[in-house]
Length: 144
Image 1 (cartoon, helix red, strand yellow):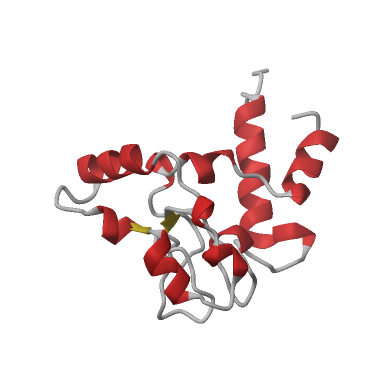
Image 2: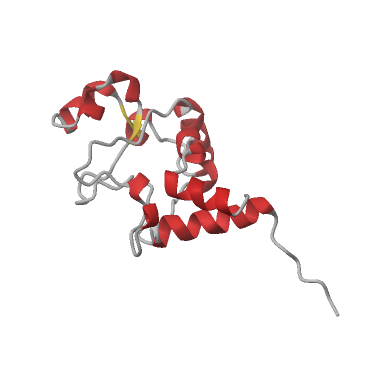
């Protein structure tokens, strides 16, 4: 008889987070990646305090020629993109992750069609640390 390899607490937490974020976001069945989309909410993916470090990691792994403006939106641009949204009128919320202005949901430009982050391994500190209340509750209930 062999002993099954059990996932570590961190691995199990990652599985729970991935499932919730891509299939049960905010506890709503078939809802996905709310924190990576704006829709019509007063919401911003920022501030990104480690923007310079993220830009360095992005240049090392994705595009050596990438510029700050390609990855981020700064206050002056942001306030004109969404003048009706208070969070985009607040300087302390910047720099923010650039969103895809062509998508109706205004998705993070790094969100793939499969609802997975295309830069997950190098993502920002803001994204790395964020957990919605639903995910926090799930992890607490599971003691993870």
